[in-house]
Image 1 (cartoon, rainbow, N blue to C red):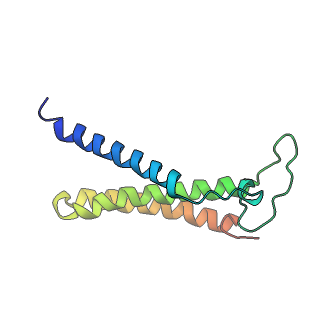
Image 2 (image 1 turned 90 degrees about the vertical axis):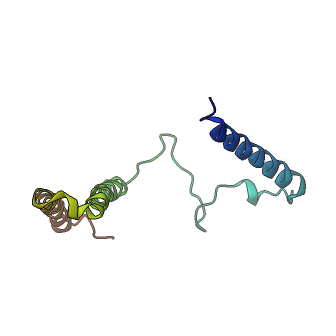
Length: 119
């Protein structure tokens, strides 16, 4: 149980700091209520009313998100490989080259299909 004492103490300290910060901001913070404060913020653009079914979101949004995930995963795999490059040998180099070539082929495919063109 003594091994967990510092973790429990840190959690207690964090919870106490969080509670005090919320309390102080509630008591000392400005309390100016107006109509604009309760409207959704749309990056400076006036919000348009949506249809009851919620409207359709363009597929471009989802494709961009998926591309981000693919290239983000590539970085997640490249970083540990770069850190332990010298200790793994030639097998790791070949595997990483195959991985990068595969991702590069996917990138070229998306580029040729116009997935990165913004209209």
